Amino acid sequence: MKAAATHQEILDIRRERGSSVLLFLTDRCPVGCAHCSVDSRPDSPRITDFDLLESLVDRLAAMPELAMVGISGGEPFVERRGLTLAVRRLAAAGKQVVIYTSGFWAASPRAPEWIDRLLPLTTAIYLSTDAHHVDGQGPERFVNAARVVAGHSVPIVVQCVDEGDSLAATRASLTEALGPDWPRRAELIPTHGLPHGRGAALYAWQQRTPGRDFGPCDVVDATVVRYDGRVTACCNESVIMGAGPAALRRDATDGAQVEAAVRGFHDDDFLRALGAVGPGVLTGLPQYRDLADREFSSICGLCWTMTKRRSGGGDAAQHDALLAALAGLTD
Image (tube, rainbow, N blue to C red; front, side, top):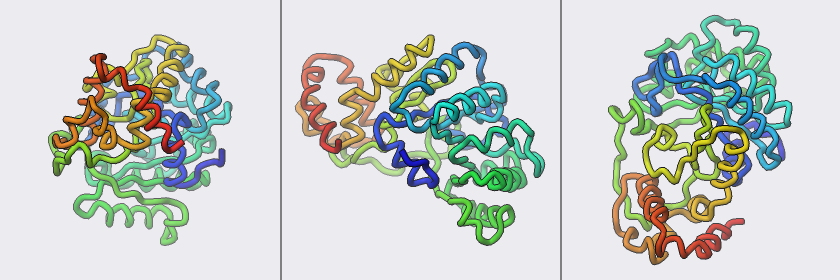
């Protein structure tokens, strides 16, 4: 598979079911943004079982269908030992490695040597910044981080919550960091705040939508593997942290169980159908027909309702053949 170099190319790989996973490397983050969707804090849990981490990383590295592994948290750069292990082994196995960071590690124009050694092994770096990040660490670290990453000729994707003058301020910081031709070296992707974690105090879903009107889910095609062995069907932050239906999570104790969980989620007909045609189409099935007119604040609410109903067995469990047919419509 061609190496990803742009945000869209990375999304295309993520949308190719089973081609990528996200490695959630730590819960810890030193920045403390008010809008954090996973409630990461300086004292949040971090890696304690490095034997488990090594086992699950080696399993991911050995899975031939995986073309790309994203690494996030929390802030993955607080885990020097874990991040170094993961990046080196995944890159050595030919995986494209994408890291998501706030750039907090760039306190000075020169990065620590261990980071300079890791960056050339990556496919792209996602830098997050907005008013909340600036409040937590100032704009200088973002500027330093952008310069360091660009110095290694690694593609940069900047994610910025679009509120107030954050986008304008980020463009100014990119110009300071990379010059007026910064769009040749970095992409700026506007995002929105999520009502998860601490973000629940700042954001709310803006409207309710009938179940039949939801299209395909764009995050269910790549599973998430947490540093402690938890595997989730998608990157919904609440699911990763233990909320929502238990059927969307599996807890593994070694790499073999992690691999089985990843493949189990990738092969699940219900999840495949959510990504292929979306839950709105599934409301046409008998067991979900009453959800067509019910309104939900987000696609996740509809998914959770369907998942809980399906997990209960009975009539819902008898329609896997229909789900498989729907899931295969875009194959």
